[in-house]
Image (cartoon, rainbow, N blue to C red; front, top):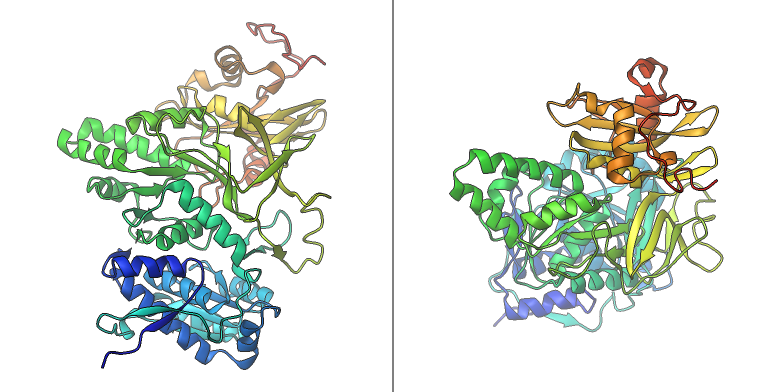
Length: 569
């Protein structure tokens, strides 16, 4: 007599996986290059999800069970402390299948930080992978929340398990308005806040992305991004829910490893941040000169074989876009503009060659997004994939987040041109107010980044008692140019004006040139932290002798007079 089939809830994402299992039960769904389960098939994954779901139900208290049964009750939050890999993926889908909210934590979270995160959402349970047992237990002891460890090796897979979609059960009252995931992000001021997304928003957002990316079971997505951030979350869910293979590699990932991995030529999708794009460009140029041609061409074949090479987290700029389109034989990089608050991306460019996306644009707005740009140039959006609320100890956290018509204030400066979106940075950090003028820092940053002697350039406003702010430039020169006269302030201003057409009022009046080995403050995803750069590298008294400051009273020779050099005022 055959064993009864396991029951899957009839919920989005799970129904797609059920259909994929019916067609190819032995297909590899998850590849974990350094985890306890190196490869997992569709049937193995579904088996672990449904059996873990049953175990969760058994250890939750009656209050949590009742809240899961009641569509009008408060959300039940279950946290995950696990390195990116198979265990993390099973925990995510099991929590989702239960009807609870996924709360991913950074594997490196400190006990005190975890205490804040868990108490803020009143987490019912802390789950962990086997590599994180001790860390999770220390947090559990401090916070007083129950801890559960998932070990795939203790879950013996039944031979050829079968599954059915359940129509009734203790979870039949799922509400699509209940929470799907809570992502913590740093606040502009105060402690981190939680960004809560609903199940309905997740379905709308991820299905939109799956369609835009053309995801299918034939894809293999190389995932090295942090999975407790939005960037890793959407990559994981659109890949697994499409029945494609997700390959986790964060524990072994580095540019040299990636060069070798690309040479195998079996990957179809991945994300590279702009900083990684720059690093890989250097690696590819070096390999072209130093490697045997067959080895170099194998890497290039793998790079060109990627159906999707996506990027985001900061503006890519037309120079990078052009370089990588050339590397990939005419295939564009997919530029994504989004934020933690929006699951569908606000705008995204196409992966199809010659789709007409102009250089410098992040593509067309998502079909889900309604947008407007206010008088200050700030982008505001509405979307069914938009977050529902912030969780914060600050009772005023939602004040001013939306305008009077319900549009979310992104804080980003944008323009629409020919149906394509162009982002000009943050309204708060990237608008420099110099006397009566407003300067968009990314415009100058993009121009300066193309200087032949410049490796990296950052433009920001620094305080000035006479003008309010000055336009400041931080430059990391290319190796061998650290002492070049071409990187003094007068030469930089002249080059920006003549070669890139930057108007005079936008030109830098403060310059700091770093040694190529010096570091500046960045986030873990590589974004420059401009407030810290301003404080540590420009405004701290100890470094004043490192700065070159332009005398505003000096009329520099050779500066061409042009209309609107001073904006006509």
